[in-house]
Amino acid sequence: REYICRARRHQPVVPPDVAPYIVEAYVSLRLQEKRSSNDQTAMTARQLLSILRLSQALARLRFSDFVARQDVDEAIRLTHMSKASLEDPTGSASGGLESTVREDVTSRIFQVLREYSAAS
Image: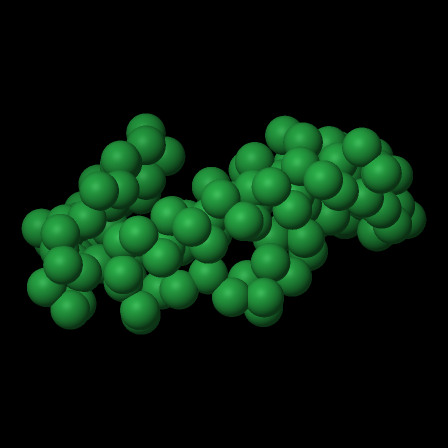
């Protein structure tokens, strides 16, 4: 409780040197989505806002008043993995398109736990 109370005291802002990084990352993600032509998981302005909010939340967890590039990178990774979770375990999207998503260790652990709980 004390941790949460202390974290809520911080209201992180995006510093001027991180703002262009967020814009470049968003534009890059939009271009990647355009090339993959997977309309179900298109990057939208709403997702940009979610990346900003996640970045602020991650900075708040560090008790920081400023969003760092690492926070933005982690927010993008979380958004990307959230989209990847919409795909079935074989790696194909619900539309039948093949996925090029590389699975990270955290996601693999989550999948093992999900399979374990389903078997119980």
